[in-house]
Image 1: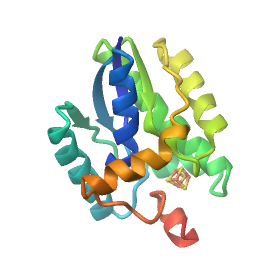
Image 2: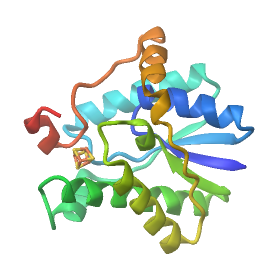
Image 3: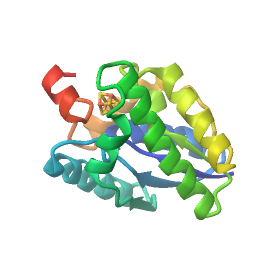
Image 4: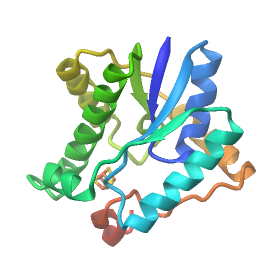
Amino acid sequence: MKVLLHSCCAPCATYPLHLLRCGGHLVQGVFINPNIYPEGEEAKRWDVYRDWAGTADLTVVRADVSHREWLDAVSGDLEKPGRCFLCYRFRMRKAAAAAKAEGFDCFTTTLLISPYQDHDAVIRAMEEASDAEGVPYLYQDFRPGYRRSREMARGAHLYMQKYCGCEFSLREGL
Ligand code: SF4
């Protein structure tokens, strides 16, 4: 299948890309992460992702979505875990819309690799986005490959951030 892989960052994309390709899928990546704060950090994670993708022969694009738009989307609940669900919902909706617009068979996300994300909430957000946009999502539990993804990232000398992304997580130290 032709799969659009929403990627939160390069380290988390390493193992899912490997697994999806092993499954015979044709993969393209999309970086839709307006949650990342400050702007310079978003640019840094994108640069690392784009450069790594070049070495992995992966075509990637960066979505132009403002942090303001993301803040509006999560403003209904700024506390975890509600905020994170709204954040997933916002990004998955954008990913599903991009998959539909570009004719992909389905979309998925590297958020499914992280033991630090709310796995069930990510799945719920994917389901909602899939229903809303009329494009299937591909669920794979990438978490067994989390440790391997860190090894792959270290092997490629990738920058590994110390917090999830938004200003709230920066303050929370998560
Ligand atoms: S902590 Fe991470 S998942 Fe939760 S709202 Fe912030 S950026 Fe999104």
